Length: 341
Image 1 (cartoon, rainbow, N blue to C red):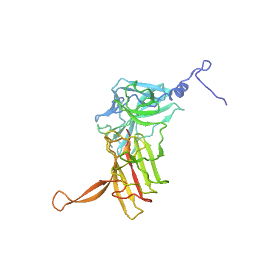
Image 2 (image 1 turned 30 degrees about the vertical axis):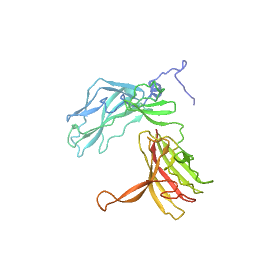
Image 3 (image 1 turned 90 degrees about the vertical axis):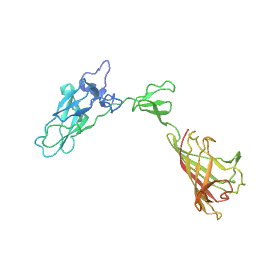
Image 4 (image 1 turned 60 degrees about the vertical axis):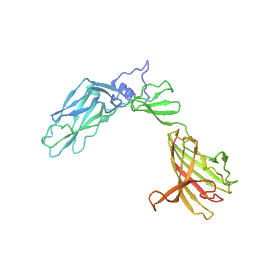
């Protein structure tokens, strides 16, 4: 037994099998297109005894095939069949025949399996699934299902300001940032190395004053990043009773929020000082600040408004002492998801 390696000056590629073994790893098997809505090697039918393969090219097991089409491929008859038959139109790489050719491959109640035996020199990739009704030898126009694979393109690398044109389905790496092309633009996917989860210490403020919840208070924020989305939970349990402030209570975000969207969070309050519990909402005000939750609000009944006797629910901003007086042991939790800048 021994190791064999090629191509080298002393051991060049000498057989078709050696070339196929090497070249088949250069790209994915499939048709040459960035968008499978194209007609590249697409199969269509019109109710006759043949199907048509459109012009195009493809790659199978390291070899290239070109069709200057349209190419008509005969349908195998199902005239003696008692039920509909599902067939495949495939491109078959056949080393013994020195070719890649279109083949109409018959099935049964389900489509036939593809042959994938590079070691014996036969590899098939699908172009379409066709249904032939019982007792017929034709494929109706609506009886063709597209099964093409796209070759795709390798991952591209670049720098901001010098981007190549967007290719649909291609990935672009710029530094640690990953983008997906849609044929028109490069769309941000995520950043490698960005902390996917972590903790931070929220800073609570009322106007320009930092709120002190007391020595040893439980004041923690936890976040998880999904691309440009951040899931956030903030919780504070005071060990003291801060003074009342005229300005609404605000709290810092771990990452700046989107500068044009007002985003909402759920708020829950539970009192350890006989004030009960409540559920409210918190929100960002990007016009005021993109680095903090700007308002925390709880619903209150505000009496009559509009038609006589109609009671309306309104809301009030949360301060350190209203609508609840935050004291030792009370629990305030903010949870939600927001879009990053």
